[in-house]
Length: 227
Ligand code: 6GU
Image (cartoon, rainbow, N blue to C red):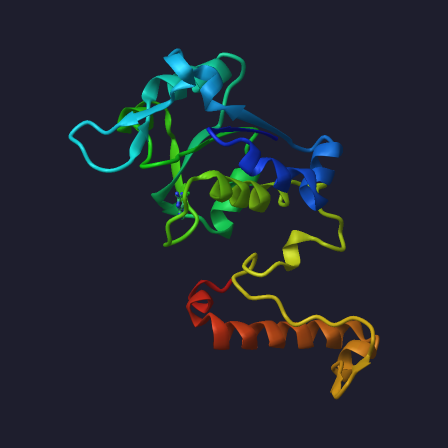
């Protein structure tokens, strides 16, 4: 998979891709993440990429031309499956959308900033609009990193069997069960006996019951989608 991220603040999203699982995915050649600085695509003086909103109002709007130039330059080099715009008024991101995106080959993710982007950029280029939840961020960069992380870890080969995405919370609309490691006794707290038993069937049954109980008590809304 190849993900091209367009932003006016590339430094803001560099780090998440250079550590841990996402870094390993890059080194293994399973994903390429390329950051593009929108300012490299403007023809305005002083690398300007935003301007006042027509009709007035507070806040600057990203101009359509640098966005068009950047997306067209990328699209002239390869086919993209989706051109995603990160915006609080997009579809709320979830595991199902992550699963769908993980099957794609090439993605463009455009990060908005300031008061948003010129509506005509959305009309002409954007195929999918994603929000990561009902709260407002200063820009789309952190949201783009969240979406990329959720998608990349689902690409076959990125996770080992041990960390398999199949046992994640939400993958089957159940929250994950509690987990324990050494020591078996910490102060007044012990590890549930069954986990020390070595009885795999019983352990799996216990984990499923715990997952179900957690979901019932914390996120009963998920159970109506339970498969
Ligand atoms: Cl994608 N962008 C911004 N600016 N705020 C958000 C968001 C995106 N998703 C939730 N809040």
